[in-house]
Length: 265
Image 1 (cartoon, rainbow, N blue to C red):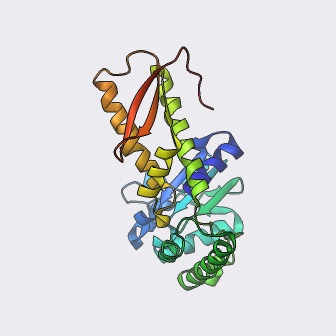
Image 2: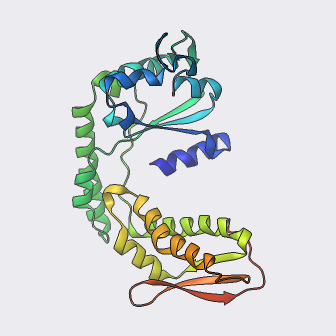
């Protein structure tokens, strides 16, 4: 969900930094809610403005991601009603901040326990579709139990993501490796994972309830961190392509001389 928001920001505004992420676990208490629009006069932080209003006022063309919206205090939803209804939000200075060029995305983990129980890898097509239908019905039911109707009725679209299949996870690993290779290009290095390593990373690290995040952590733990240690030790001094293979149930690096490395795009 977070990666989708990043991709949307880059697609709409040609800049991934156009994404504004607000962690709603920081707004669980009532006294924190005012931070969205700014502290009242006389309180600490009054001149700084609100985390939400000031950011959008300065950069109206952006994607705002409310991460784990279900953790927010109920007063947060009351504040957001003005945005969802009128496309504006009044800050602590009395200014009406325009949200009409802003995309709002709210993520939630409601129903993830059900997803984890019902989505093992390798389902047949019909079974997978039936499983998704069940998950969608239960997640939408949880939404109705958690949020008031007046709030849900102002949300344009509710999207229940399909659980990731193995082929999706393989593509995610490839994207993460491409991202790593772009970072390594300045050092004339590139890594290449064979299919066996990719399958091993998926089978040992994927957790349906947490989406793609475990795969990013797996790449960091088993590829990036060990590779950094080897580079610090002085290995890979020459221009090399590094193959990652599986030996004794663990990824290992094998060096390959290459004449030139081309940026992965």
